[in-house]
Image 1 (cartoon, rainbow, N blue to C red):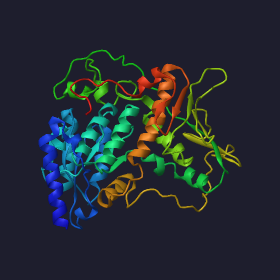
Image 2: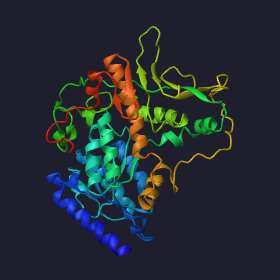
Image 3: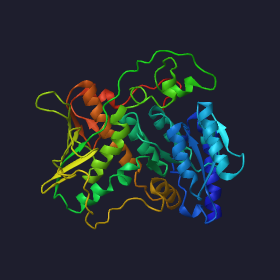
Image 4: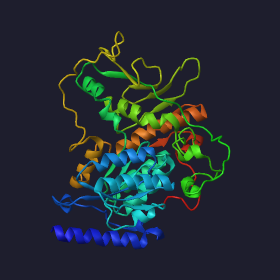
Length: 413
């Protein structure tokens, strides 16, 4: 049985490799699925990293600590990033076997890669993730997982259709904020009514001046789906987040952590708001999300650091001493599977085929929450949202912001 499943998986991967650049993988009628039995007790998950800047190398080093992982390839359009990542991998295994690539498709077309880490700038996440999943790879993707709401819908649909494991990279949702979750789920503040999330604001237009392009940078490929603009070194050194073509700014960067934590604490992490109202300097002081349950979440204005909550009986953190965190009620809240935090959760789920803690649905819903806030800021208007259909109600101009045009030939699908 094990031998047959492995043979079938190899045949599927070969089919995808032959047809990948022809874009025919989307027509495959059956989902790609690796049963947990495919990973024997002595077999490792063959792993690769795509996007090896500072954050990507940090994630890669985390995965290198797991014996279940065998990293065999890394990819980055900045040559020095790929070389630094390769050095880390080779040092870990005591050899010189790790391959480096500029074009991520060379990793995706490899038969022997089971799972990939995607830590590129945000505007590349969806395209790489979708193509990786249609080619039979499981995906761990850094947050913010998407640049647009439509991208998240496509990523979720692809993961479900092809039976892939997808974990978002928001480790703080549980790792940093689980005290809030235990307090709220344990009833310490009664029924939660309001939450405040203190993170940065939306991104804007890119204003950086042109600078000479150095050797070792594939600038056209770094831009990828984004509109063409001249090179600036800040963009390839992690300074892309303030600019709308590549990211949603602090709203999506730390917002995927902070809003992700608030949504999970309020048990709203697999739905969405029904109304988003931007501040007007008068009656509405903070961007306000309203949910069908009556809960409101505000951008800014909290008193307890990144997260603050008010319920029917109390509020946390306690205002008289925001650093005072008593032991929370004894309550079990399902979180990571396996051992080793968010990375270990992903590895466990690749083997077991369970949904990870930051499954694509939760990651997409959190990113959607952040994107809707950005759109409300950018357009300075209230948005009515149907969280079930994932549609804007009664406003075609807002609806146009649910996705962005992609520069050829870097379109999706």
